Image (cartoon, rainbow over all chains, first blue to last red; front, side):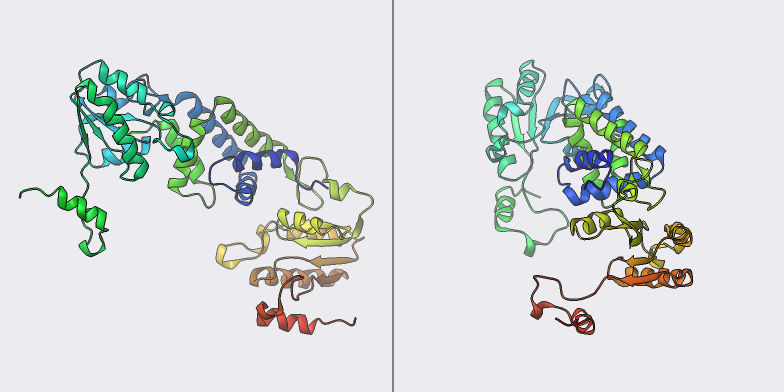
Length: 199
Length: 199
């Protein structure tokens, strides 16, 4: 005997489609929303439609935006000859938090990952090459994560960019500020040693 | 500088309101939905509105339903003189899975929990008393969870029901079928001993 109404089952299924949300959690979320006032559900549905409708990728840097061109790309005071390549939109937030970067960005929307069936064509690489190919870009800074896939993606991109006569750099590796040496792993310490600078 | 579009922030906030969903997870879910086709977002929003609109509480047993009266309460073949009191709609599903219960239900929508500011007036207790007070109910089976709050709620209800001259029972405690004695906790074993039956 079917105990729950069909509409509730349907809402549960929608939640269960989201990444990291299992069946039990989906049911809990659906129950929660049903227990909230009608306006709450309407607000949620509206936020969903509005976000999906108004948010798209900036045609220049591929970051998420609700304008024709994103505020960073439109900002005349930023250095448009300096492009920082990141994997995800949230990495732009991390970079901006440092407040010291005044160039622009390029968001790949992922990294090359054969295990997860993500190849170069699934990323915004063509857009980056076209952008650099048009000229005006002096330097491309690779700021993908310092893990295997991020590294491989950075290496792959730097090979594609080299013929375009642009300087390609990578964020420095080293010990994190505020950390303790005794807890640093060997690879990080080795990279910190290799990258040592005069003071 | 605000990096993400307002509509995306708004969707993230909506997700973050859900129980057990933190800021980072909310952002991940919002990003995921933006990466899906437009129809996916529309389907989600529609499921939300439809569920909230069509699903309400059965006026008899307080379970969730999309009909005037839920299928269980409407079923003439079930024993309407036997009412099983459960805390949540999902407990009805658990009971129905056993396939051996042929009475009806009453869903409290929670248990008394002073720590979480849930008092008797926040539960569907008045509805239960009215229902039993109308007559026709021979027995009320308490099937709240066998934890402190479930126990306390069952005790509280049994005191309220006693003057109405109805038999009030509690699901049996004991060792779970298929489990191993050596892993049973002391309290469960004690209860199993107290409740022993002739074979």
